[in-house]
Amino acid sequence: MAGLYFHIPFCKRVCAYCDFFKSADLRRLGDTLAAMHDELDRQREYLGGESLRTIYFGGGTPSLCSPQQIGGLLEHAAGLFDCSAVEETTLEANPDDLDGPRLEAWRKAGIDRLSIGIQSMDDACLRLMNRRHTAAQAVEAVETARAAGFDNITVDLIYGVPGFTGDSLRRSLDVVLRLRPEHVSAYHLTVEPDTAFGRRAARGEFVPVEEQVSEEEFEVVHRTLAAAGYEHYEVSNFALPGRRARHNAAYWRGEKYLGIGPAAHSYDGSERHWNVASVERYIAGEPPGREVLTDRDRFNEYLMTRLRTAEGIDTDETARLFGAARAERTQRDAARFVAAGTLVAAGGRLAVPPERWLVSDAVIGALFESDDSC
Image (cartoon, rainbow, N blue to C red; front, side):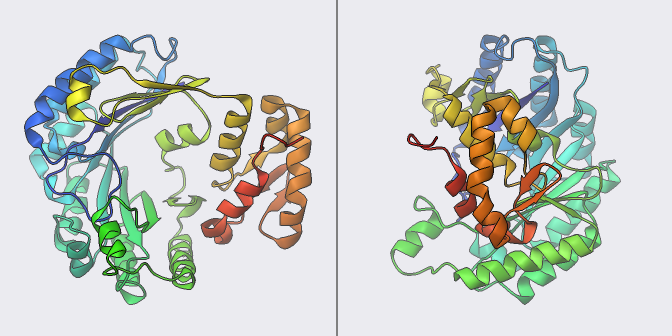
């Protein structure tokens, strides 16, 4: 089974924290969608005949597209790939793009899951992040989606925002819990250089929160959502029982996926490919970049993605996929972390406890296989 990802890199307004490829020139949206249809035709053999399990529209802001445009891409994909077993079709959306008629039309087009970028329920925080909606619009968006028949909704939150920790975060969590989405993605703010926050930080005008505050905020999110019945199943993801994000989980399991659109990435099981991060060059047909992954690359990615999940790594699976020697070395290297409590060994698995996920990169990096590993 495989995944299909459509990248719609257009935004009406650029958020202060966003480091993804995006464009605010909406005049190129139509030409880009036409080029995406062309790319679908060119890549019809990329997945080797595997059936699709999930489809995801990300961005950017896919909710800028009309239901007809989204439905056209889905219909085209259905003519090229076996979509009979698709379990989840997600559309990322901004709250102020959501009204009853559009939501109902998206459902009819084939969207059955919404990912709504709420980020905060504090209007001042939203203004700081240069979001184009208010907290009231966020609440209305979720309620309107419910009324339109959506029963699989995820919302995004950002924590660790300077000046909006503590009570501001708790208020956002309280509102989200009253809305009771099936899934919550909660991300710690990362200040990247090529963003408005990054440029302000370089001038000394924006100071990221201290590490202690980050850990406290992470703990607040973890405890609050876990107490409300959400499973903390990946560093940034929480789900009610049976409502994990299936598309993202396929990335973590190393399954094949095809990415369509500017800056989209694809993986065919042995090679990674990526489209140019330029609307103009993508429309012009510039071919994708290519990277052949070595066994070491795939092993390190396996460690990186699996140890960010509740299941961690299965030692038998590690031996089957990458050889007994790698599995044994991993267990040897993991011993000191198990003794320190930053890894747990149980039932043939190694996993980072959820309360230590925020600082898990050090553990994962220490387990990576380098050129001189044996």
